[in-house]
Length: 490
Image 1 (cartoon, rainbow, N blue to C red):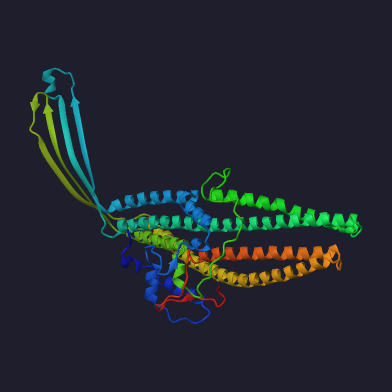
Image 2 (image 1 turned 180 degrees about the vertical axis):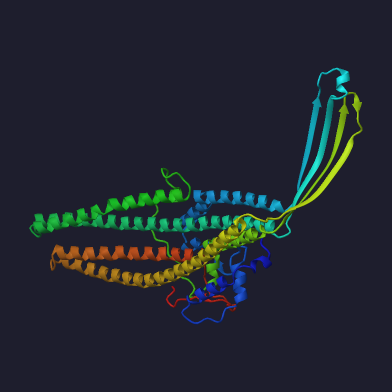
């Protein structure tokens, strides 16, 4: 069920201008003047169809089947999502109840009575035994002359739409959380594999150093130094194993599974790897923000409060009621059977408030304040959405540059380590210098892993900020609204 366009036009137009102005500020170049009517239509669009060219299943772009399976499972089995679905059922039932006010109420009534006094027949002439059967159809209808019932029904409909959007919010958030924890899980496994390989190499170095010391080619200081490096790396392994285990239990909780049981989607035997974040188009349409479920929730909340304000204002006017009854009665008095009687009644009544000590006016003022608060919350949500996008774009662009520098650093330090190992074998440098080269390579590799992890996490954050998707390639059609187009967007 959707609202009519005439009712949508009653919403404050200042919000549309506010949204256009805010989105225009996200562009690095001055866009063409936006089409206000087109943006308004998009802002108040009640369907949830994806925009053309928008990939709403953004997690598939990471090319990780396990991640895709976890997200799909979480969107159906996550407890927050399931609770939100039940709220939708509750709200839809409330909408049906409120919409029923617009229609008449028809009920069927019936009764049967048998009254016997046991008195002598002469006395029964004044108080006869009575047996009666009655049946009737009753009709009651509140005529919605001033629109109070219609406004209440609209508010209930918007409440139901709000719960549907809230369910999308739950799916939106759980998808991002699953992707984030999966990336963290793979990152921790990759760090652990790197440290375990280095730990094995350091143990080999320690054994070699002890052999050289036995042969008089190394000192006790070199042996102690090599043994200390082994213990230092070994001390970093337990926290990583803990991190992996905690992340797995969190993923199980997100998909609604028992944390005590391993997830079949997580393959521990497979080599760890970080999902490669996709490279995005240099321009993203501003309409992406309109797909954010939290904005759509805030939008429908203030629209519902506006409908309740109309209901409160209509309560100050007269109410009209129509009542009717159609029935039949079969009556027996003592031994006398009376002919069945058909009867009907109809009445039109009204009630009008004359004096209520300001109660109705106060109700209007109270609801007006609620409507204004909901409007401000929507404006705040728009500002927060723009901030999320700006922060995500900047973080992603800067992390791309940082990751490139970290990768270059790792390559250079690996060259230096190979040269140091060659010099150490030839006896031109001591063990301390070679261990320093190994530590520098380890630090560079771990930093590179951190950079790749943060790149993937920032991509997830951008997908969330844009409402759960992005545009892969520029559209060929002319845009009539501002675009999100930082120059450094990867």
